[in-house]
Image 1 (cartoon, rainbow, N blue to C red):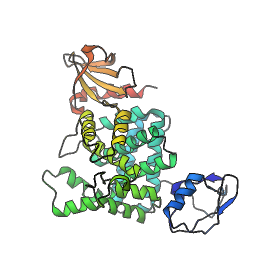
Image 2 (cartoon, helix red, strand yellow):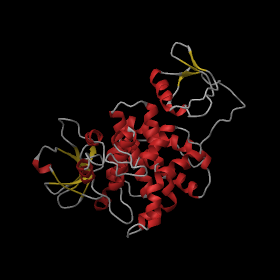
Image 3 (cartoon, rainbow, N blue to C red):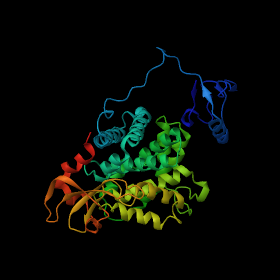
Image 4 (tube, rainbow, N blue to C red):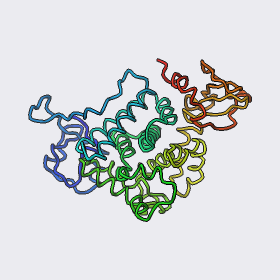
Length: 382
């Protein structure tokens, strides 16, 4: 038998199989309708099991991913896989805008979420670096992938179970689905939102969840996280002005990741903030808009200089942070340009405890374009 996950149980729909406890005792018969959310929570907490599916059932169609989904080769370095994940999400957005392949949305998003979870398990620093440094893919693609990665990294630190982490990653990848038709316009618009645009923005969490439901998403946690990702702890969020504990813990975490990713990811009408500045903004609002402990956990997990951060050193060199700093250890800092502004063909490790190698300022990716290939090699080593 297999242990069921939250995504297996759907409110107000008959169970497709009987459920048993870990000793094989029958809990619920096939066809029983779960109509109260806390009953689902109780089942998941105690552990409920369903019979394994038949090994071979010719009458049951086997779901296949659309042709445009290219699973990142497991042998590829994680830094390289980030581009494949971005390309798949970009293609999914294009197909959704063309009103095609909507039936496959759930399985494509699940494949992307699992790809992020696997990549974080192998080398979260490389994935974080690739997404912080990416300037090739559209804003929404990188903002959603970075948000999903931040959620996964923090959720691992919180020791959340795999099923919950999968729902979180899926929600992070689909939270702005209803904005997809107008996202390009919003990215390029310099002025204030029109009343119609403002109404669309404020309603997009509910509308995104409704769209997901019509496309086959039945995971109640995934859908509720999408509905709540713009709620704020002081009640100033939308669409329902929820506050405090009325907001799911996962939604509070998603709000932090969503805000950070939106701040640091550039788009045509504005430059992105430096990671350190975005984290400071979250810290200053931690007691009003966001969950204070979760903000502090996110900052501790990501560090104030996340992988991919470009920095100016006291000696005039340009450097990049390769991995998150561990407690009581120096930063993993590598120089890319010498003090005269010339690229260094082989990046040099710098001792961040040396005052000459202290960080004095931040740099934008555009200031280091000539070092793009050298940058990649830092994370592409086998």
